[in-house]
Image 1 (tube, rainbow, N blue to C red):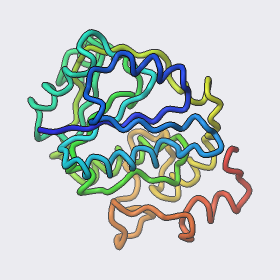
Image 2: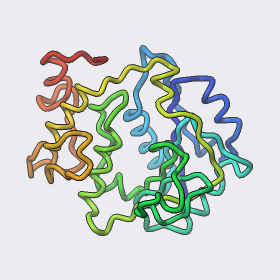
Image 3: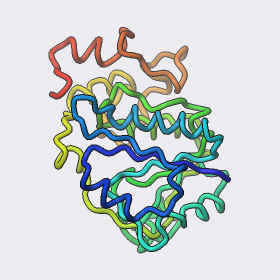
Image 4: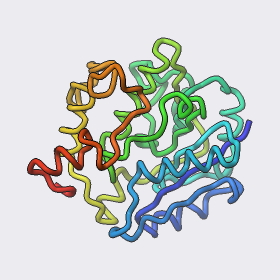
Length: 247
């Protein structure tokens, strides 16, 4: 079992503190400097670069990391054992030590609330990208990309989806630090309008699976998302109909 990691960062102080805690070999890590807001690639493009890196290294897993997390004494190396033990899983979230592994669906959060926020430490099996392609870059630089990816994964694998949470030696600091500390702007409304066009549901309608295919078009696979010059893209619709990129 082989893995690689991708770490996009927009706030240098957080990255500097994060990298001090890492014991994973540096050749397995793609650290993407987005500190220049004028050239910030955003989370989606950065993660897609990670997918390419995973394929280049012929790895089985891509681990997405936030610079907001801090590893303990094990330095992230305990993740390897978790992946070794669950080779057929599609998605595995790293969790704080208080969480009981393999019980993500339990009402109590699997023995405790995960103190690792959102998708700050998530491993994706390469079969996910082989099946549904890349992150949708219309959500650049941030917002709703995780919900979009979740929908696509669950639609692709349906009841066979294997997705769970396992504790490791890690803690977290804050949510949305790239917005609150680095000044990245990513307003919700235009991205939510795009999301609604794509899936026929609001980004916050958790119990609604929306369309079965992107844009309710059976000819479009789950890997499809419109490039900027495509008439369906956020650039050709939302940003031409009253929204600005940073609205």
